Amino acid sequence: MGEESKTKKAPLTGREQSVDRIDRTVEDKKNATQPPKKPRSRKRRITAYLTKTGILAALSTVLYLFARFPIFSVFPFSVLDMDFSDIPALIGGFAMGPVSGVLIVLIKCVIKLATSETMFIGELSNFIVGVSLVLPATLFYKYHKTLKGAIISLVIAVVVNAAVSVVNNYFITVPLYSQFAPTIMDVRVEFACYYGLAFNLLKSVVASVVTLLLYKRLSPLLHL
Image 1 (cartoon, rainbow, N blue to C red):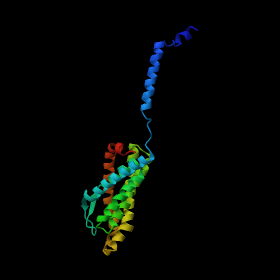
Image 2 (cartoon, one colour):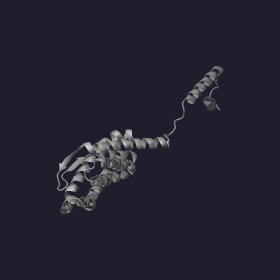
Image 3 (tube, rainbow, N blue to C red):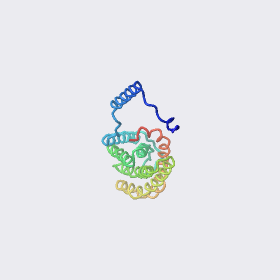
Image 4 (cartoon, one colour):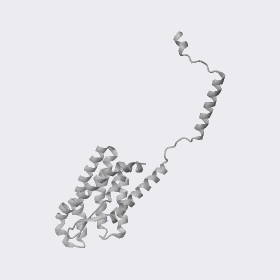
């Protein structure tokens, strides 16, 4: 009994009860004036997704059109140009999912068609090889969102990209160009297995390293 009486709370006096009622009234009014936080609506999320994907696609297009430089000349392709247009696609795909990454590659290539100097063959090849880099990387990272997962995803993507580039050059790019320059078939093996492979390996490795360096800094701006 003695212990219970010690722990029992003393009743409030009349003045204390008035103060308590005032405090609760003020708190209730404060809560009433603050609308409950609502999760972002589906429509707003879609709008943000499309807007950010569009911005990255525009950046990718600018890099594809204006930030490119020659690596080496390979007959009869005159020159192979290095560009960094896959970096925005990788970053967008990591932040917003594989579909966003593929859309960025697609939009870039479609816009480039307006100024194509390769009878659209170069743009088709760029799309195939670009997707072969972006899709494996972003698909793997979607389920392994750690630094280790990002590194593994990019290593996988570089390997897939290299294999696809050989197949693409041997069976698609060179045969299509041969319709306009038949002698190109004479160097099909060399281009697909040596020059084209080396070029795409260099390009994909550079894009992967830059993506690793930039992604964590940019991801807070891109996550939905």
